[in-house]
Image (tube, rainbow, N blue to C red; front, top):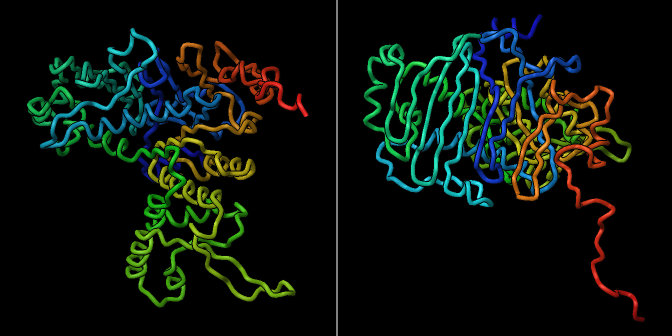
Length: 451
């Protein structure tokens, strides 16, 4: 059965990111764009989603892999989206005290240090495309706008803001909201997004679905491998537990299952389902996770099973894989966007490829979940991804980062081209011209000349 038909039957609310833009933020001086629109390629068609409810002709890649040299700005694309999302969700709360906005423009050029930073996302929620953008500096919102399109038609305005003035609001939208959007202007502040103000209201048409998607976005930064707290919270919920265990199937991490101390009571019937779930919640809140291993005798006959504490006894790669499995299961279940920094850290190449193949598989990811991830492992460039899933972050001598899609109509990559070899040889974007074998430095002068 076609994956789109499956989604209709299960009544999933499909939500997907089309593109994200940022300008004058961290190392991005000029506007850069991460576009998840799929190119007309023949390979790995199951690595794309069809945005059928909005436009059946629009296909979006399920993931985007960001490559580049260290310090070129790979993590900054995730930081940019993280700021964008957080500011939407938190810039306004009732009774909040005005404070400086924590946004950092590009600081290596005098033309940008006093200019606003710009952010824009175009995304689909069910059958509607939204485009939302704002400009902001440390003191105030400079501009803000929200547009929509129901189906493959031209955009329509929901609201436009310039500084403190909400210049225009859709009359139909305001009528549907019983004039509450117009009333919300009273709460608008120089440091608060108008969208954030609307999120704080109840049951405003369109806003609830937008808020639900943004709140569900997952961002795993460089420190996510240090704690299992969020992963444990996901694993504590029965609706995700089976999918997580299946993520671990065939991963060959040396244990038969992962569970909390009370897991064995469920199958034995010693506890009711309600009590077991309650105990799961307690165990997960204490991060008390265990893996189960088989014990054998000298003749390698099975004797019993033993529990290992996940954090104390398992490798950092095993812990990380479990964390990733939990968050990816959540993202798939809820049609969510997940952004991951350093996806491949602590993972073997084989396990990394296995994880991505599990995520991309049409039997698993049919709900519109997408992943943007930073990665160093160049094996993925060797036909492990579609050519339009590959992105390169580059940086010039002035400290300005740019982002480039691997394959486009204007700059195509032949399917038989070795992208991995070109990247290793420094022939693609995102590679250093200095850190090469021809420039290996001499660390000490005259070392070893005297005996």
